[in-house]
Length: 215
Image (tube, rainbow, N blue to C red):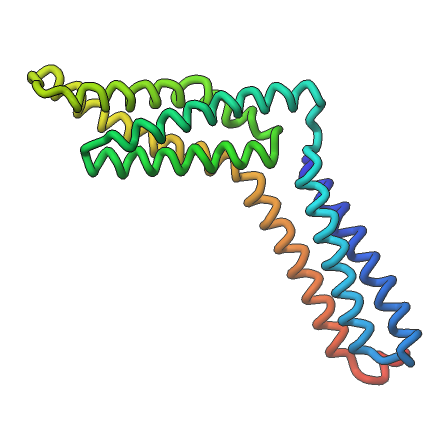
């Protein structure tokens, strides 16, 4: 809800700034229509971009104590990610290399997404606390056992089970990333709808009869 309110407020401010600039240019440019429209749209986009960048720089709705906690959790997740990367270089199986590389890339994206929007930790925290540490330990044990000069049926079965579970875990990580990004997708859809409405309104004004434009 707060994300929606911030988006509406940003578009409200940018739209009004564009209208004001358009009116000023229209008056100062001898009542020429095109310069006023272009200037107004430029001002609207400029104000919107500035407000959007400011929002991404300043974590909203997160207190200083919460931000410290989020950074601590992300630090632990990043440390595990580095362990996974080191273990990956010792893998001999091409299939496992691809799986672990995919998992590494997805978790990196999750961490980066939460870094930009700390309040999203509530969505990713169960994964960071449960599946993620287990996955790293499994990969490290897999590397250790797969490098042994001898194997029995039990060891081979354990390695195959690990390969299967890591594949399933990678799919779970993909779903987790989509959940973390869901608010961004929703925000983009909202902005696209508002922009579409704005463009339709501008197009309607451009197609007004000349007599009405001069009124």
